[in-house]
Length: 167
Image (cartoon, rainbow, N blue to C red; front, side, top):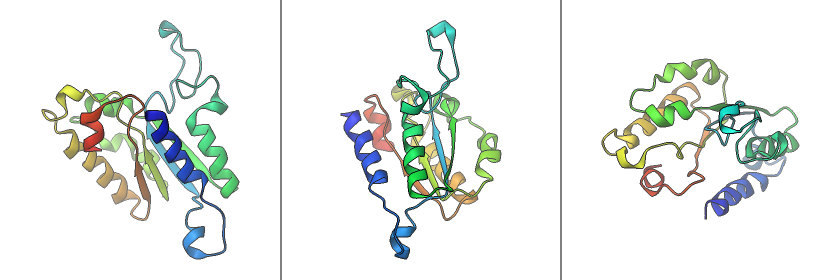
């Protein structure tokens, strides 16, 4: 089921075409920010058998979802710049996460921000730690620095209904 959502998400982005019409041309993004977790990027970790430096679950860098999206964005706009960051620390401690830690990344004016945060959020504690409030705060923080950016929030790869409902 999660693959269906990921493919639908990718399909929506891939269906954007360059056009001279202003309303369609806006879909050709120039500065893209992707905040995710190990599926977005994971540094080598020999102790778990991971030797790549790209999104986990992909057999190579060019096959992870970030790099596939990069290729598509660049095909729509040769000047497209994609910045991506593993923000799994946010997922496991969102109630105490210092959002200013991402200031250097959000200081660049993005026109598209993609949030891929869900897998590492403990579904047993989303109410206790008020995930919805903190996730909303994250979006508001990003929008305060990039008011014109389109923000896309995705569900996780693994089934996590309590978190996905709140997203």
